[in-house]
Amino acid sequence: MRTVTVGLLGCGTVGQQVLRLLERRRDIFDNLGVRIEVTGVLVRDAARERDVPPGTPLTSDPAFLGESSVLVEALGGIDHPLALLLPYLRSGRPVITANKALLAECWDDLREHALAGRLYYEASVMAGTPVIGPMSTVLRASTFTRLQAVLNGTCNYILTQMEGGKAYADALAQAQALGYAEDPPTLDVGGFDTAHKLTVLARFCADGNFPYSAVEVRGIEDVTLEDVAQARAAGERIKLVAELRREGEGWHASVSPRRLPVTHALCNEGASRNAMVYEGEECGALIFAGGGAGGMVTASAMVGDLLDWLIGFPGHVPLH
Image (cartoon, rainbow, N blue to C red):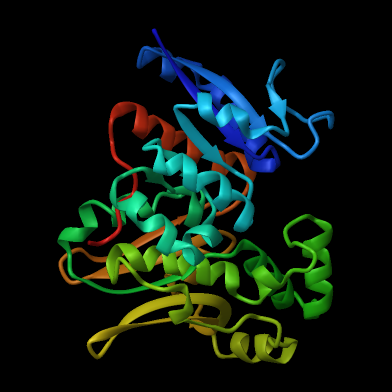
């Protein structure tokens, strides 16, 4: 057995489930001849009680990064994780992250590390539903034409509640009470979370340097009960849709509320889940659907990335 040292940044909903899953799947690590040792878990308050395995080394001191062979980032945000990750990546060691905002907005800092295979980020777009893996490998043989996706569970929930007669403000308040939406909820309902995810996807099928600023963004704040009722009367549903399609010699990326036929894959497969329709000339239309949020769902993809690294697969490499 060889020991692999793992550092974890953050111990919120996702970080706690990463630790739980590392414990639960000891069998698969044993089969690889690997013993996982968590060198440290970076938190603001190490004395705060958390649902983690006994003996978890919680600390507010990031010194353990020097002892970690691989780093799992579950902090969220941009500036703080970037300051910690860049020196680590420059040392040649790999990082696993679900941080779509960081990936979308700080690509100039991160791209060289992604090209070198040091960045693993399957969980950044649809959590445990694998879309980045296929797009960064087998789907590159097919000529990409378009994708459409529903990528934000909070907006999905609110629009579904509005279909049941709840006003937008009431549906949003309920989503916040259930912990689905942040306070303030702008990142979700304003479409920015979806735009971050669309930017990450675009770098695998359109342009490896696709900028976040190129995404046209409109959220669901102005959708009314009348809009929802009119769509329903026409046999349609309103969804917050991310779309990437060819336009002339370039690409057009947008996030906006769209009326779709109730028979559309994003209304069926994505009824209460994240979903994506990927279209290529040779592969045809492919549908991906599944859980796009949640602690254990996200952790499953992050631990999957860890297994890929242990086996020897490189991280997710964008288009050159």
